[in-house]
Amino acid sequence: MNIGLFTDTYFPQINGVATSVHTLADALRQRGHNVYIFTPKDPHAPPAQGDDVIAMPSLPFILLPNYRMGLVYSPRALNQISHLHLDIVHTQTEFPLGIFGKLLSSVKKLPMVHTYHTMYEDYVHYIGRGYIVTPAMAKEFSRLFCNSASAVVAPTEKAKRFLEKYGVTKPIEVIPTGIDTSLFCKNNFSFEDTMELKASLGLSPYTPVILSVGRVAKEKSIDVILRALPKLFEKIPQARMVIVGDGPERGNLESIAKELDIAHKVLFIGAKPWSEIGKYYQIGTVFCSASVSETQGLTFAEAMAGGIPVVAKQDESIESIIENNKTGLLFQTQEDLIEKLYMLLSTPSLQKRLSEASFLKMQSLSVEAFAQNMEALYEKTIQLYRPEPIYQHIAKQSISASVKAAKGIYKLPKTIVKKGRKGLIYLPMFHKNSISKMEKSDKDA
Image (cartoon, rainbow, N blue to C red):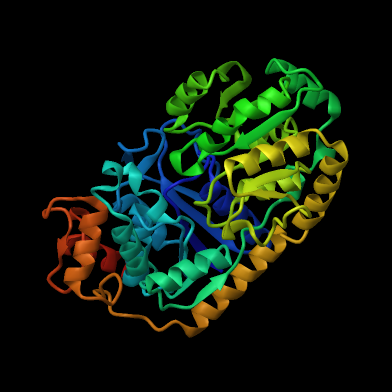
């Protein structure tokens, strides 16, 4: 098959979506498929190797400075796409590149699969602190976009239940993202290299380390962990917390650490290249997260694959991989968190037991199963697909409802999002002439 993956975030950005897309693309290629990744062009990224990563024109995303926002329509990219003879479109985002993938699937009459990675109701604080875009608006937009796909992928049962509550009526398949355990397995990292890395951070070989890896953002609730540390440090004064990653909440968290008088024991070391992430997990005595905004929680799985015991806030998103006191420790309150961290950091036998159990658990979450399940879904979707009219609007809902949802999410003026003459919601780049060019390009191909 010729497969197009459309994502608003990709390497060198390090996050769950980028990791999932990269893992899926590599695994599908190993199964003999041609996979093309469409993503916003990042001026700071090294040039893409080969023709399988197609960088779309982009602009900086004001709300998240480290991210780029794709310009929905690019004649050059469209010309490339016309000669790829895609069999299926797989969108990994509901925003610019996802919209581009949706319109492309309509114009070229291709089936579209959509993976719902993000619980957007937990992210509306980025836009006017939740006053411009409300959780209800985020749910409505998610419903509209998912219902515009031929099939929907949810990484966990939690995500599937949420989508069903939103009113998504398209078939939803639960397919967890696979983990390449070889990237994190402790056997791939020498003790000497790990000790050298700890020393470079000012840590002794025996320093107990509470580790956080991932985007430093409000919804990750890292502040919950920081506020538990003063009491923990009273019990284990030699312990330290290391935060690997960067993001919009870093400055606020640094201020919180100073207010709590623990700044000298909390290390913010910034984002690290994906190729090096595995070795950073190895400096952790325990991996800790209080986030409940995950759809799957890949960093939990990565830590477990590296044999690092996990302390996590109890949540549906991780119930399939973390069982309390068997493959990790779950907490609910701050006092509970302090108790679980102290118990784990001060009990080597518990560390060993949870480490071994969590590593074995991750062997079942294989990349091969991930690719095989997605391949089967593609084949079924292609077989059942019935082309819809090119001008079918985004979710078979009333045009007014769709326009209202799009305007609410993007907060765009009427000149940017408006009702097309034949029912298509479009940006200026998607006016009648652009659609004609797309149709002509499709015929030429």
